[in-house]
Length: 431
Image (cartoon, rainbow, N blue to C red; front, top):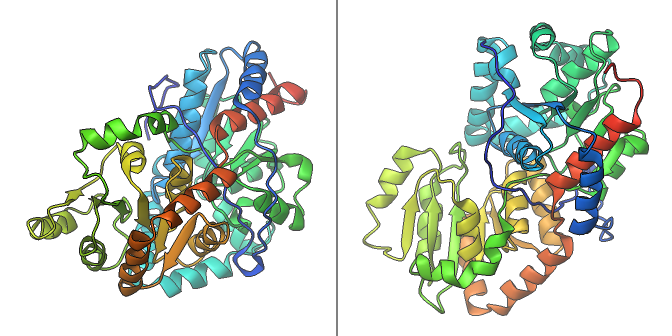
């Protein structure tokens, strides 16, 4: 566990939109959204606050598995660094730095393999932990994972604001506050679209959430509304690309009049039998991109059929997802929170397939309820629904309009401003 220094990095400016998330068993979607602050208003707020925020040290605690947590961490770090206020930002993998390697590896393997091979088992675990009380023995055990190691590390690497984008460090930070070992502001950025007990801890100072429904769910579980800010979930999505859509389509050599589909199986390769999905999509009158993530075997397998489906490009892990979303007419993917949020930011309609039991089912249900997505449970359903969309392209236009009504841009900027306000308005921090 080596030291990490606060440093500036160059990352794309993040944008975002909101997706509501009550508990899976208590889904009630509100069609009335909190007003989205105008970009100019946010910029003025940020300017005023940043003048007094030079040399702030911001620590963001993430987790290396799942992918979405790290994406949110980088989106936040990107805004802080591009703000030009001299703030020093550090993103740390909490499991990789502070949790026992045995437990860390077991958590990673357990998550990926249960989702891929035994999704009902993951759903059972998710449901069993959904209502743990903060003072329960099980929750206390989870809170101590890496807690003491982190506290010792923090003595040599002090921070002014500590932000957690994964549930495990949220519990550890709350525990350290209870024990009197931490006196800096603690912020939780909830990256799920459902309220789950792992995010809720009594000594959290500020909750950054993606929707009114998440806020309402937290209040229902006893979190004071004064601690909650609805900003949207920060993601990296270069929405400026939307102004260059036609030029980018020409750059990729896409055929006019033929629908373009982007298929994403997830960076960790957790989708079962994705080659079936490839055939279901590529056999339709469409063109597009099939992203295999880090699954080399899948990419090699699909390339054997590349001659049969010459209008599809098979790609592995890429860093140009915003560009591919920009040139596409439809995203086919699981209902991962960060992927769907990026799609909303890029005004891309979705066909959601094979969600992970738990939070992804709630994501799917919300997106379909507001008209931003259609759903499919099997590859046969994918073929049928995709065929319908190809025959009725006006439906894609309707979905795009629905997306514009619910997207919440500038989430990273809004969230950062709320953190700054917490820092400036509270007098109890030891400065």
